[in-house]
Image (cartoon, rainbow, N blue to C red; front, side, top):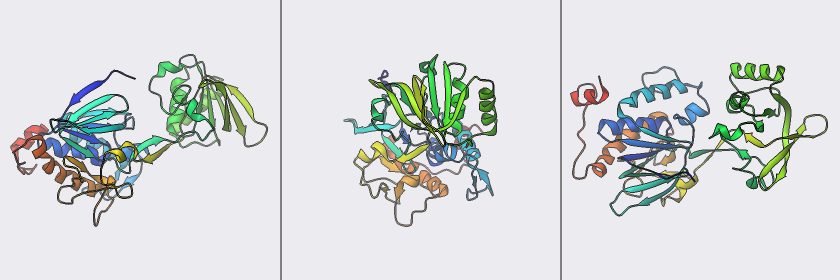
Length: 343
């Protein structure tokens, strides 16, 4: 377990998708700082991870904007407010402190204290799809991994990388010069990755610097959680083993609500009911915005989440500044807002 890191801020945002990012802006306009926690390795949520090149047509002022461009613009918009990101982490536990604040702890032992919690987790946390193999739990975290947190772990090791998307190819290319030997495994000779990455991978294979098999993993060999070989089953022909020290599996992500379901909220079908006046949950000081919430007439649109973020910020203000009321200001004409934005 890594050493505990402690932070204190005004608002903790769980989820760094477009709605979570815009919440940083709305909170910032009212002089509230934010820390964001997200399971992914970069901000953007589904827009960045699942469909960065997907066109979006219903963002006001943009007849068409690509999902990644929207995230890039939101990141530029919140720069003046210096948000702190805690990426590749899951919000694991939440408790109320004696001083009235909330204390959130992540699975990476990061502890954040704030008077306001904003849940903007979309449909839940993204978690890697696990290998569907018997007794896989014994190997996970020891010699089977779903993400690369420390490249040095794989130095001079023989690694099998499974998958056909960007993550699998990018890490195969990245680790080729570090690892002892890389073996890429995919069920077909077609990939869902950037053309440049595919070309680089094929070049490394043709040069004999990397192995590639059109196969599926069918079993492991090893003891005490340490893999010694992987059994591969090609479409045609006999199964065979590849000796290895570890496996990196990149089979995509799945959505799970995760520990948020244990926060004591009044959940309805994995969604969080909110008061439409301010998008506060059944627990004071905890708000839910975006696709994670539910209320009569709810529309699961990024646009709706942006609106919810604005109302949430004004309702959050008294928790951060007790006894005070947030003053409404137009961004067009307010000199105070211009100063905050540096314009």
